[in-house]
Length: 112
Image 1 (cartoon, one colour):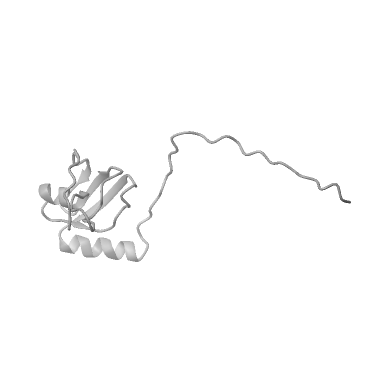
Image 2 (cartoon, rainbow, N blue to C red; image 1 turned 120 degrees about the vertical axis):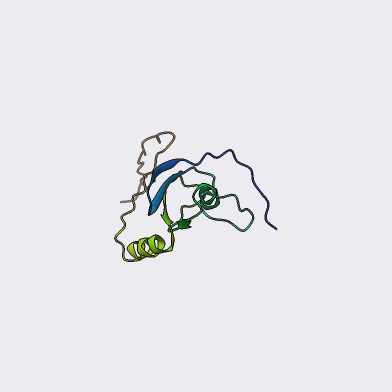
């Protein structure tokens, strides 16, 4: 049984034209409907852009740009671009804090 999770999510449109839609997906929001919830970026986008179709996904914990096609032909072309590795993705980790430098220790057994 799916439950509706209510999050105050404003659709953050980075770019839109007649063929594509680029959205900034926040961390914590599903990209597509999941097993337990339909609250996701793709359905939110389709409320404002009914022709928006999925091209790729980002994990729920991942924030970043998501590309959606505007219509079946754009989706077909974009899917082919992803499949043929013509789309270059870049993942950047932004740590909340810096780690302490690692220290090496050497143990000697006293045996020669």
